[in-house]
Length: 151
Image 1: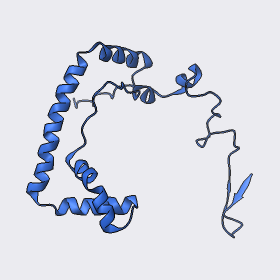
Image 2: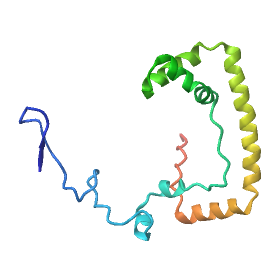
Image 3: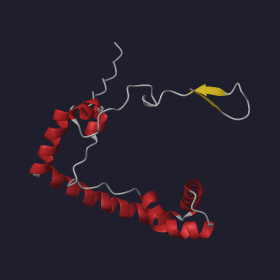
Image 4: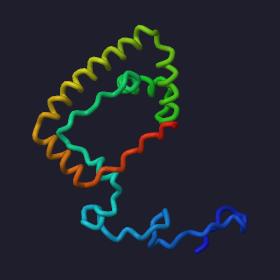
């Protein structure tokens, strides 16, 4: 089938049949949870299955600042557009005095220390070993080859 864009007749594009995915591959006939669907998932997707007991890494200093001040920034600029809010937050972060930014950075370092302690404790649990074994059985993505050393 042909879909025409705009009033011009030469600006037509061929639309793939609806039974094929947008990349031109085979139609997705199997649901996500089935064995065939799991086999089709890439190694990267399988690896990203996350253990819910694993501690979460804390956000960086800038993102902590944005999370705490987003509502005030939205109220001041009068828009909820993501690009405008991000631009305003970035400009305000850059305009902050160095000591205020350092406070956020210090808070981030403290949270990162707590995260590392929690992660070390988590790695000692049997759940971590089970999750690693399951991730390894699912297939790890290939590791990058070491760069060749000049001879």
